[in-house]
Image (tube, rainbow, N blue to C red):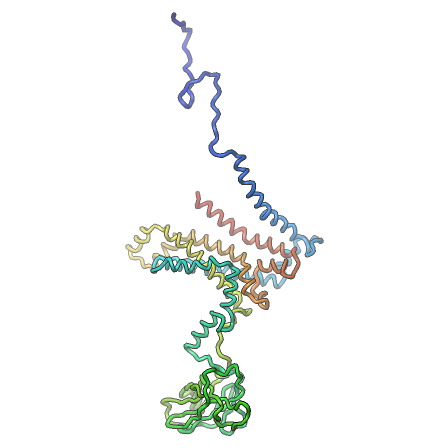
Amino acid sequence: MTERLDGPQAPPEETSGGSTSGPADTPRKQRRLGPSPMMAVAFLLPAALLLGIWVVYPIVYSIFRSLFDAPGDGFVGLGNYVTIFTDGSMLKTIRNNLIWVIAAPIMVTTLGLIFAVMTERIKWATAFKLIVFMPMAVSLMAAGVIFRLVYDEDPDKGVANAILTTVHDTFSSSQGYPGARPREGEQSAVAAEGGAVVTKQPMQSGQPVLIPIVGVKPEFMPAEAQPARAATGGDQLSGTVWFDFTPGGGGVNGAVDGSEKGLPGMTVEAVSNGQVAGTATTAEDGSFRFEGLPAGSYDVRLPQANFVGAYNGLTWLGPTLITPAIIGAFVWVWAGFAMVLIAAGLAAIPRDSLEAARIDGATEWQVFRRITVPLLSPVLLVVFVTMIINTLKVFDLVFIIAPASVQPEANVVALEMWRVSFGGGNNQGLGSALAIFLLILVLPFMIMNIRRFRREDT
């Protein structure tokens, strides 16, 4: 039986999968890839809750608290913020932070770049990286304790002054007898002249020079000092400088007695017509002799430098050097971090660019300055900005290294915030204002880093 066609029939509808369906069929529901939104919320909620408790709430409360006075009862508006920029100690704190922001990031980034380049050119690069990066494994508080000892003023305890005194003593004697003076009223003797000690009359070769000294404190008497030996004259100008004091009494003033000790390490000068013709140094028994001195009469002089204290280095923890000293400790801790990041950037530089420059005749310095550094500029900027953030937040090193007497000279915003709020000031209104001020300083650099990271990801 044949079917009668009244007209053209519409072609069957095709689905995306190639199957046919009638016009009354509904399209298939598309399935979502990945977990459901509720599952994402369930995983993010704990982190968001902790972030709100530990970050958002403290920031909001600190802003609110900064508008009130120390007890928290009286509303002062922006009064605490005005105090930050009008109080003398606060301005000194801001000045110190400015020094930190300018000096520390530049030093850390520069040293990190130098160390990173060195690791590509020296043997045992792995051991070198390990040594430089090792301070990162030490907490800032422990680093502060270490450098408090490093900067100790006593060269027997502080490494910094031990190095300085060793270098100084290599080129100049540091033996000194502060407070010592010539014995008064002696005929043989000597007279003080502008802090120096000079013989009263010119001396000649063969005429022994006796210079008795008193007032030497026991702590400044060298351990190597031997019993004084009187000079016997001879062809050269010679003499003895000794401590003219007999323990227990006795002895003859102005004469070398057997129990009296020589003063070693003293510089002795032979002066003729106002000019130094020769220089000698006293031995352990206090004796001295000028070698190769022309015949004639000379004034024998002990320079004023013999009567000042021995060189003991610098006062690192004093008010003048305390901030540079702490910045040095900061650089020691963070230079390894900068080295690792910059070394990773160096490894990513295309070597063909460097080789092409060398083939074209560029020196190593030109390759470094015009190719390596520009290609490393994104990494260097990240390190530099990160160090700025760390310097703005520095607290531990300043608190541990700076003694209480000079801490105001080394103060920074983070430490001042703690001192004002909890370190005896008990003014949490001003402390909260300092916290918000520090947050405002840090935020631009954090945003800069985040934008750069996002730009690199895209």
